[in-house]
Amino acid sequence: MGKLVIVGTVAFDAIETPFGKTDKILGGAATFIGLAASQFEVDSAVVSVVGGDFPNEYLELLESKSMDISGVEVVPHGKTFFWSGRYHNDMNSRDTLATELNVLADFKPVVPENFKDADYVMLGNLHPNVQLGVLEQMEKKPKLVVLDTMNFWMDNTWDELMEVIKKVDVITINDEEARQLTGEHSLKVAARKIQEMGPTYVVIKKGEHGALLFNGGNAFFAPALPLEEVFDPTGAGDTFAGGFIGYLASVDNVTFESMKNAIIYGSTLASFCVEKFGTERMKHLSANEVRKRLQEFKKLTQFEIELT
Ligand code: AMP
Picture 1 (tube, rainbow, N blue to C red):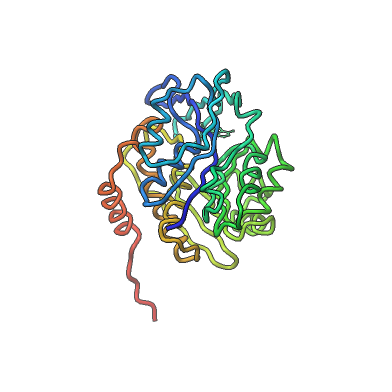
Picture 2 (cartoon, protein in one colour):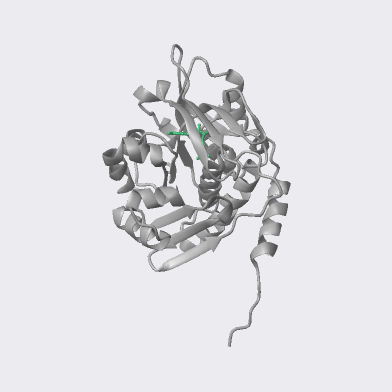
């Protein structure tokens, strides 16, 4: 089992979907990543920042899911990062209504001393300089660094993003973002170009259409589990990433074969995340429920064709 450092936003989200609307609720990339990774027996630490307006009970929730939160800075007179989004009827696309960086604007990450030798680092979606700041504090080269990012950072901090992309082993990105990053429509070509930028593994998430893994000439595809109801897709990408790296850290193995399983775990956990608003579903997810869904996943994707 490897130690895991997670950097990302711990946030307030306000979400509108065709099913309803929330006030400010708990969100943030690191929150979803940490909740997903907590399904595995991994020592994880969250590096982030919140304002004095952030409820203690939210921090306690992260702690209760066995995350070390000593790297979550609280700025007493600052305001917590706030994101608001509205989903379209297809639930696959959304408009960002607000991104208020607040305390994130001046954040200098500090990796807890006892996590500086961690073998697994998840650079969740946030300012690429903060992601770089975390990498620079690692005392030895981690076995695996996974990067997640989004169009916001491509639009606003391109050069810094290119710096961090050079230094990671895996990037998880959605299809639109892969196209924006490379200017290529074909995901296969985009994945090849992204590998030339640095990461040896490229994971392209396609929402309800599953996820692709590329590594040199190898490729793997996993569908998303067909669900009767998608209530709120917020955090699905982060949950996927948390499941992906949480699994790899728990088996402490970073081969292409174990990454295939990591994708299945990521997809399975993401399928729970979307069933309720925000973190509601992930907060109460049991190992038994996960096991059952993995069985469904296996049934859905396994077939035997005799090839002569
Ligand atoms: P996902 O649905 O997986 O893309 O992630 C949604 C989460 O990302 C929300 O909980 C937001 O708080 C967070 N988020 C949205 N925009 C940003 C941003 N520009 N930087 C960092 N985190 C963000």
